[in-house]
Image 1 (cartoon, rainbow, N blue to C red):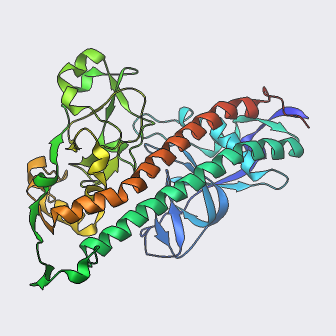
Image 2 (cartoon, rainbow, N blue to C red; image 1 turned 90 degrees about the vertical axis):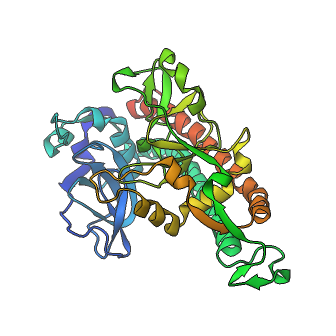
Length: 381
């Protein structure tokens, strides 16, 4: 049986619940319109997709593992019996719900719309096979993502061991003076790397295709998100050559709610330029040589708090200048910093390699997805 059915044959939909405190430190992840936004002590769904209901991420689909809580701006998808849950999830992804939203000022998606979306619905045996094929890609992506987090955690743990607890190699033979290892001194960030704000691309320059421009919204948790860049014509990049990003560069948000947040630039086909208020640390011709220490330094809560305090945080839009960040003082030793960078360089190289693998796997899965979910690609029984 290869007939078209509707999403309503796969799911019962219901809106998430309002929550005045979506992060009370509970054990269950809280999902909003585009992923986890906190942790709560209650749950209202288990092992199911969550759809962004309203706002900028309306129509987005994420798979939520285990017990979780869905807030009012997410839609809970209750999977019906007799349906392969992963196949039903891929049916949602293939429906491109973000293109079906309503509302101009505030996009939203409704039950009525979801119930009327038609989907390919083969017999359960075929659903199982299709879900197995696509899930194999997602498992590899999830495994690589876990490895990336573990590698980052290893680098951060080593940073704290060397620069917070002062247990760096040879520390046993170093005399402590006023609570610090002898030879350690005050270092300004500018001594480690120069920081510049990006180029001021004009709003009317942005077009559908062209040269990629990274904005603050593209800063990811570890690596820059390269999936939704803005673009400008090549002619408008002539004066922005010094703002080119290369693999291993470190960027930082200089304004807004995510001020102080950093991310690493992954391998990317074509040029990427930094937009204004997105800062670039100039790390030299081989950024990886200086990346580890600066990355872990700016991941510390104390550094983020320092940046927020230095910014005009009382205003609606907090801002900080590159010069203010360059003047920040830390305690350290240049030789130990160099040793740390050499020690952790392989960890960050592996992070970038795993991310590149994930990009390739994602592209392959996304090419297969519409063909499998429409029945155009025949699967042998």
